[in-house]
Length: 194
Image 1: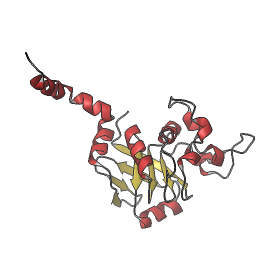
Image 2: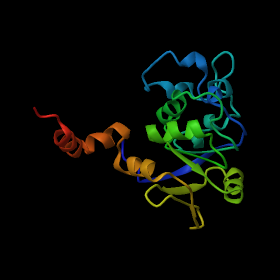
Image 3: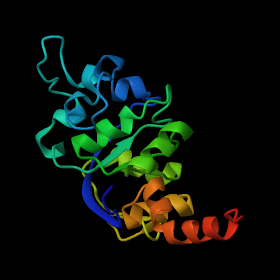
Image 4: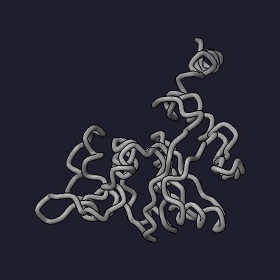
């Protein structure tokens, strides 16, 4: 996992409420254990016509949305099944953060463990972001703030351990490996000696 301290990007807005993990990445694309290449299938049924051509009106298909790393979504994002492929697909597409007024618990936990920053904002600021696509934002993971274009910094909740892992660029196993010396010393002190 790479370090994520600060994300500066324009937003792409997908205002739909209750986007579930099957809409993020459909079950038929879950035949892989690799994260690579899943980005082309993110929001597939919403993004593409039956013949595989892009739907011109879908936000991710707009030319000015292609390089956005922050997704602003409607309420209750990531509900549904607990598929880890959903944050994998969003990350492979290029997103580093998702903003909503509510993010499903299992999706949020999977996102944090894989390096995608799930951000819950109050309704007023979220509503402004929905109405202003392509807003330039700065996400400061270390300080848990989103800075809006007018300079207003808005805080967001994030678990302290998850924030530490994101900023350090490690997952839970990486954190444990950092403690290896202490773990080995503890084990040695408790070892049975005949």
